[in-house]
Length: 325
Image (cartoon, rainbow, N blue to C red; front, side, top):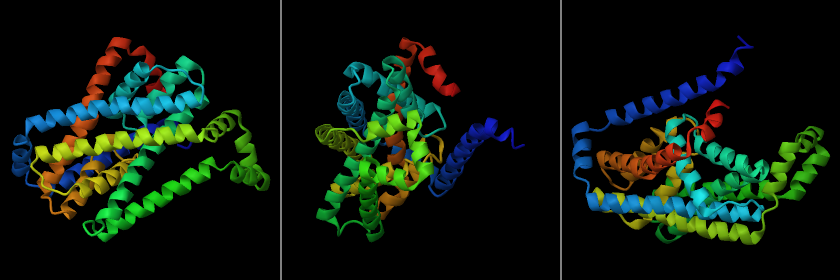
């Protein structure tokens, strides 16, 4: 049994993620009248849906720009077109693979294969993900400062805590003196850090220039404005009448919650977060659930369809190795 566990561990965890998604979706759907949910989705304004779709696609290109800034700082050469295609393909695998990091793994693997700079590429993927979330939390914090009376206290506190944790994580990762001090005091830590791939990755994570990080943060803010705009447009499509401040605070929280790889492609977790948060603002459960479903379709499935076309045109053989690892 012990010898067989590593072989089946991945399958077991993937099955558990799918089970978590199913359980959460069933619980959420049971709390909503399905006829009402269908009526809400059916009555969505198609013009706002189209506008949200355009914003979603533009957001993928902006993400590629942010990634390119980080790659150039690490002396990794890649065209914006190539990075944009990799982003679209990553959405395809986000939809297909149970793991929450399937898309990031695809981006890192494919670009590492073509450039031969694995440590640098992996570090840019990690920093890119963090910079995006950090920019989103910064937007939420600013919105909270100017509209704190609208937001329930527990949600406001959670937003501030998450921003503080983000700052702490950034310092822990980037502080070379801290890592050097730990290596001097903890022999096991020093040995782990000396492993060549680990050392290369850590060195890359700690070598970004302030200018590149500031530019990446600025582009990250631009992308997250697009992400929030997409949510607002979908809210308009459902005839939701909410102050902008709710979107500015709630969307970042849902993004943080989705980091945890506990469900299949975030299904169930996303819906639960949207229903919980937006009902706090007086939105009906069926409308909040409809919003989450539209966000998933427009923000994840639609780019994945584009990625699927790119996958077919480029050939599946380039990506198969990631699925087998």
